[in-house]
Image (cartoon, rainbow, N blue to C red; front, side, top):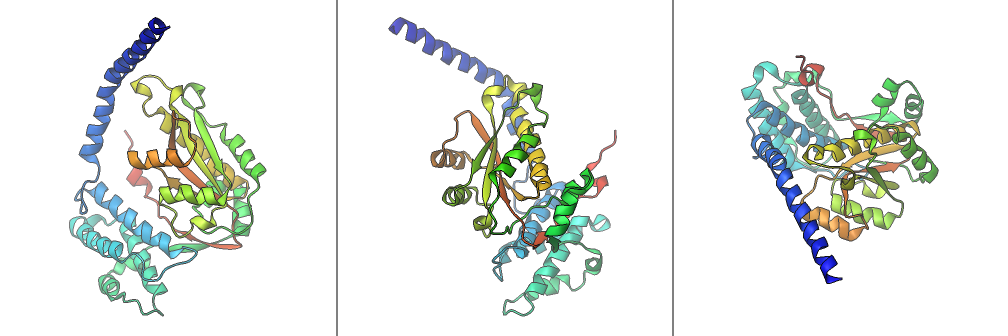
Length: 329
């Protein structure tokens, strides 16, 4: 018996060592590139980095505008940093102020508007916006979405469906039917995957206590987590892949599946919000302690699901211009 066990353990170790040696150069290549090009400081100077930083800051403020239980005076530190970065952007790229520069201005103006009858001091924002002529052309902040419009467009053509899918952060008290969730998942199963391996997996949470427990670790739903009726956790099974050339395949397949699922939920008349799970090693381990996840499953992100209120405030979430993302070769 011992003679059989020892070779088996040794063989597993040998296969693991060979795989690690084969995979290491590609993973190190990814690590090197991410370390080299990603944002590494509070005040980035490169155009793409600075733009991304501005977008992430104003979007946090934008989301705060639509919270179910909005807290006045929120986000002052982020607003001060945003103003600093906007000044830096204008000084460096005054000839090509982007749509996101304008959107940031609009978000700040909306922030002022909601505080006009309060005792919160927003003079520092007023002073910054005083000489901004571009404010009149800006779009940003929030808008009101009516449930009847959502229902109508979600059953329209594909362009209508895509355009009406928005991140909802204030759901009604009406419970979501599990059959409707199941139907949406079945629709999403038509998504493409690497060599048709279909490695995507969906964990469904219905119990409020468990939902809140998981979202506490996720940390991206504070202010509206109690409004989420059902929670979907999207992941993939690493066991479906082989070789360093597959190191991204699971994330690609799960993301394709999840986008189809978001559209399917919209088609079924449900509101949804995507919640990122790009977390540290420690957070991932903690999540696995809280819920029973198969060891070979990697989690990509969560989708909060609920029914819509008759009227819902939505963050504008301005998109890039086509010229900013299209590179014709």
